[in-house]
Image (tube, rainbow over all chains, first blue to last red; front, side, top):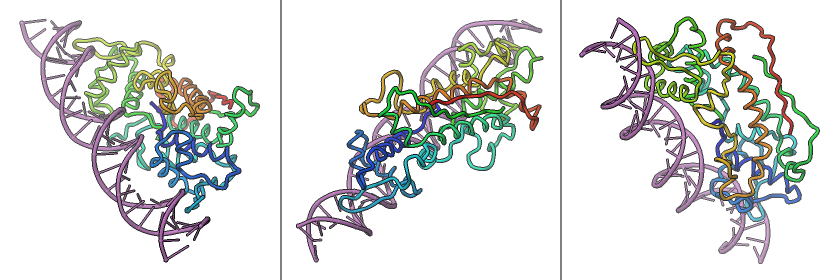
Length: 152
Length: 152
DNA sequence: ATATTTCATGCTAAAGCTCACCAAAAAAGC
DNA sequence: GCTTTTTTGGTGAGCTTTAGCATGAAATAT
């Protein structure tokens, strides 16, 4: 449980791949799909969505493809996940703005909302660049330390 | 996305309700279901599972029902969620022990595993007692502060 | 014994996710 | 201008998960 969808995984992988190849002006959806062995059609849709929200810049035609619209350091994992999977709510209660449909007694959501914000904060603190660096510097101890406080 | 199931919600609500009524020796599934307006049959299954993992103690027969097997302070939200929804994995990659099925190139899972542990840590730091107190002391500033560190 | 309640299954809809197919528009190269 | 490459958009089928219901068996207090 509490896992994100394959779409989000694919999206993160694709952005990481783009971040690792800054020299090429654009990479096609098929290039990325082949590199990771993920379904091309599905990845295409994902990249389209990421383009629509402004994380990617698309270029049609030959030698076209996708490229990051910002520096990899400026794109958080949270943005990617949010763009693909929608708003993240840990409780299945609030599906929008209003609270529980029939149960006004869902007294759980308040404390869990804090948890929600904490998780969001963690994901916001991780950039695509972090994901890309992870591979090159596998096992290398990293000095950067994100501290997240949770107040109940 | 990234939301837990209604079952987990119901489970947390039920345990919180039990924690709020320590005077009664046992509460039936129907009592809890009626109190929150959640389907009784579904809640029964959830409580059965929580009993099986040892979080609850069941008592059959008349005036029977369920009761916490430990102090509410000793039961974490993580245990409840884990018991109901199974192990929490943020990536859809590792479905067990082995990594990605066809893609050995899922270079995302390592950094996300850290996120996973962080979230688990947050959930472990929250007890049923915390949930129960939340209602009585709504708006009251709480001194306890759980600190979770995330090292990328 | 009997009524009440938990326990243990199995089953059926409903929803979401994954993935594939197809046609159309855009841009570059010949 | 035509072809090729690539994005864009719609649609639908197969699958898994989830939510909820129904039913019967075991346990227990009165």
